Image (cartoon, rainbow, N blue to C red):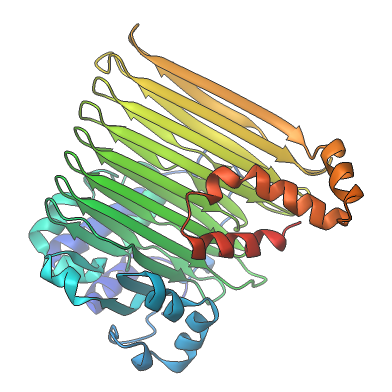
Length: 435
């Protein structure tokens, strides 16, 4: 499919996917909104040539459920990042997306017996239309910003999960997203519903090779955590330094529910991502633990949003950021405790390390309390690598690079301890390439 976007291109995408008429109408409405909206006036400067993006690329006509049936070229790409081994050792089910479409999906029989739905979002639209329509574009509206509108116009792939009431999954579900072409756009749409009293851990990995021309990743994630349910969403994003990563992620949490975002931002040219929790039920909880690492020519503008709408709700934001080699890493966050959310508590802790005189970091919080029985605690620190600690470690026989690496690993320890072992090892490996 040629580069650029038009009404005809959107009609072609919808036709290829054999979608119902209402989805085509929705896509066209989103496209008109996308044209009218401007880029955000905060964060990194987004110099995206929308006419130079490939908005849809189909690489396979079917979704394989046996890894040996995947196209050899694609299979080799995922073999390199360890997908088959991770599936064997750790995961209940795996979904893989390459460019615009899902190319592999596998789920153990135990999950099917529990009536768990886990598929790509295109399949969810066709096989579960009632559930899909109830939750699609309900929590993240298409007209919120230029990139939610763009996603609505050209979304393809993503993950669709429904966990029935009082169902607990022993191991995580996981999706891998790969951009493998220059000037490629990837626009997955993820919908997750964790019904009453259920528990889910979902993990997501994102990678792309480096090209000399820019790529665009603009996803939308909507998560529904019902009464007494728990959901953990773990992401390690390792986009290459030519990818614009512009993602809207939001969860709504009902009475006694818990939503946890474990959010790692290691790559990308420009990253704007603020996982959010809307706490609508009494005693609902939302937690975010994140890291953002910015090196040369990278701008990480990340954080979290916690909106308290019910009494006795609690939230926690722990943000770690590292700026090195002239990179910029900002925390941008919002905590809003409404007048109805009496006796609520929120904690925000932002820590930044700036590795050299060329790098930058800002903390940009927005905290608001509209009742006199609730509390927000906010703490922020900005520091450089401690010369004393560096000298001490080097006096014990470590060279400077190893000493810095050890100090950085200690700095992000709160984040690493939230990761499964395989992800913690991968994180260590990724960070070694930055310093």
